[in-house]
Image (cartoon, rainbow, N blue to C red; front, top):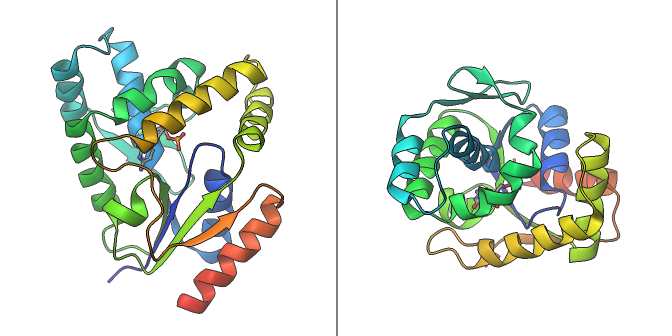
Length: 218
Ligand code: DC
């Protein structure tokens, strides 16, 4: 039996950072589901496949091997791509890649397998609603779009990836739109999820809140 904490929310809502922190402090395995879509996007770029070539993208998604280790490293066909999957190029197409139904079905299957028999904290867009609708804990993190763009801008600067605030804001707007309008696994708030608005909250504060919610459910 595994214990599952599911966290959803839009880009820049703090899910990634909070999930990593909570995982470490509470001894849960962290599964970053966005990373699985990012790996497919990276493979698409590296294999010179066009976004219109849907069947080629699905074929690629079927044939690549995605792994994650306990240190949050991500591997594509055995190669460590943890940094590469955060590049501007990958971010620009990942939402469209994740909108392809067959890619989603393959990735959801993989995400469920990655969680098998473990106590996990899993973040994404459709974890509380589709991947694990019966999760033990369901949380939805939100924040204003400006605040989310500001956070992503800071993150990019820290990683020394060149991008302007305006570029990031546009990218987030586009991803919000795409994430909300997917045929399956669209971003929405599960009726029984606990919603936390993080706009005015520090990462530490959000982490504390999430830990409290998990403790009372465990
Ligand atoms: O969380 P992220 O920015 O790394 O996610 C990358 C993309 O994948 C983003 O456009 C949303 C999508 N995604 C998804 O559709 N379903 C998930 N469970 C996780 C991410």
